[in-house]
Amino acid sequence: MTFDDMFERLLGHEGGYVCDKNDPGGATKFGVSKRSYPHIDIKNLSLDAAKAIYYRDFWLPISGDSLYDGVAFQLLDFSINSGIGNAVRAYQRALGVLDDGHFGPGSLAAAKAMSETDQIMRLVAERLKFMTKCSAWSSFSKGWVLRMSANLYYGAQDS
Image (cartoon, rainbow, N blue to C red; front, top):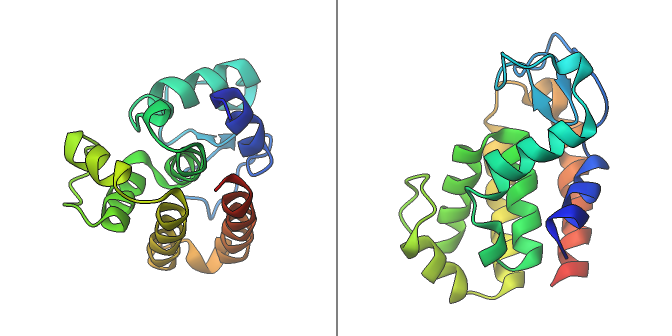
């Protein structure tokens, strides 16, 4: 699976322009939020621009090309939904390494030593724990759980 394939899959989770007062990210389009990108005109963000942001700001920092495809997708989706630092720390906990938020050689070595299926299952479990602690849980829990449920199906398909 390529980054392009994963991006297409992610669009199934991320919709068009939304400005929900309960969303801490503020105005959002294709998963790109005004809070994270205050200098971007979110309402008029193009799909190509969103894809470039996903690649530059999420895919490259998680070293997506060095991970199992199924894990890379799960980590990318988590990063876009909850921030890359949160996602990487949860992934590191799933791998059993220091959760410092920097995906370096130690994290990569732990990833290479664990099966794809185990990584996916542990990462989704860590994500569920993380999401229940979010202040917006009461507003968005149903959607988040449905998203993670769909990701478990993807995980079964990918591993």
